[in-house]
Amino acid sequence: MFLFQNILNLIILLELFIMGDANQENNKYTILLPTYNEIDNLPIVVWLINKHMTESGYDFEIIIIDDGSPDGTLDAAKQLEGIYGKEKIVLRPREKKLGLGTAYIHGLNFAKGNFIIIMDADLSHHPKFIPKFIEKQMEEDFDVVSGSRYIENGGVHGWDFRRKLISRGANFLTQLLLRPRASDLTGSFRLYKKHVLQHLVNSCVSKGYVFQMEMIIRARQMDYTIGEVPISFVDRVYGESKLGGSEIFQFASGLLYLFATT
Amino acid sequence: MFFGTTLHYHYRLPLCLGYRSRHSDQTHTSKKKKFLKIIMTKLFEWLSALAILATIWISLLTNKVENSFSKEHPKLLLYTPLISLASFGLYAVFAVLYQTLNFNNCEEAAEELLKDINEAKTSLAFEGYKFPERP
Ligand SMILES: Nc1nc2c(ncn2[C@@H]2O[C@H](COP(=O)(O)OP(=O)(O)OP(=O)(O)O)[C@@H](O)[C@H]2O)c(=O)[nH]1
Ligand SMILES: [Mg+2]
Image (cartoon, rainbow over all chains, first blue to last red; front, side):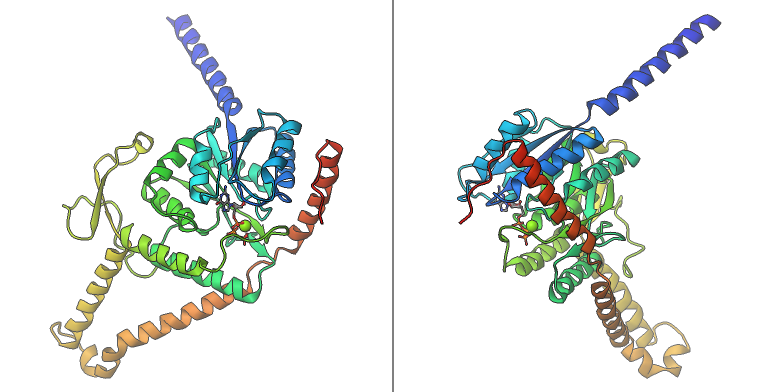
């Protein structure tokens, strides 16, 4: 009887050991990079992702979703595919510019990882933060890890007083009205468990800029856990902004929509 | 933040105006509560909180509730909503200004990025990446 128990214990221990090990080893991180006219930024982002992911030893793939950029971003992506291999660089281009929100959904369909990282390809999101997101996720098995400019050690670079004021004012209003328990709603540097992202994407209706806000609000509403990592946001060095002037209007209408429906 | 702290998300109340119902039946949150979850919209939370405060104010004002305060300071009571609104507005302005002025200016991050860009370019060229000709 005693021996039997001992053997049973041993089996359980062994199983735990194998499973614990497997959990670590089987994680794969899919990084979604939507691009539109990012020919100068894309190679550098990819190089930096490869550097930081290889250094920290995580298994990863990069899915590049280019929307027919006239500047030849796709050719740059093909060169990168040649350098890093088809396993690491996955090209899933679309014919024409169909918008950022649908680009994520499109890329997600091809993701092989159990975790998805969403970031801008314009170098304002530095790949050095990805390992920090992953560590944070592991800390408490978070469903979502969100990069935040507004917490201690986070911040921005290249913004004048006016832009900072608008950003802070908008954030204050959002925190007051929605109480989202997440400090940065409009930032789009995040890590998700794949099934969580799929679920969120299917339940979000907003388009464009507001999409990011709705995702994190719905995540809270559905009781998903959210961790935060401070990030420094450096304004783009190359290329030009695509979201432009209607941003404030989009933000305001998005805020009111979420206020009334969530 | 300051309103609605007693209002919470998990109600077992019947459906009514302003509530949005949802069965928490997704497998991923199955470890959480299983009962019918009713979520009050943020708009409705605000309206409820305002209604409660307005009720208290009016009942004090019209002396429906016996109290000495409304007899001793009738003016103060009358202007309470205005005073609270103004002081909150003032707080908001100062809070946003403070946060704006203390918004971290990541100088080092920007410098580091420039170094990273140069390192990446050299390394990429070495690995055979052809940078497009620039006019
Ligand atoms: N595939 C695809 N990518 C897009 C589209 N619009 C923007 N992007 C990409 O999405 C990311 C974010 O877009 P940005 O133009 O940088 O938007 P932003 O960060 O709000 O604005 P700035 O940084 O000020 O330029 C970048 O990597 C863009 O290349 C689109 O329609 N399709
Ligand atoms: Mg950007």
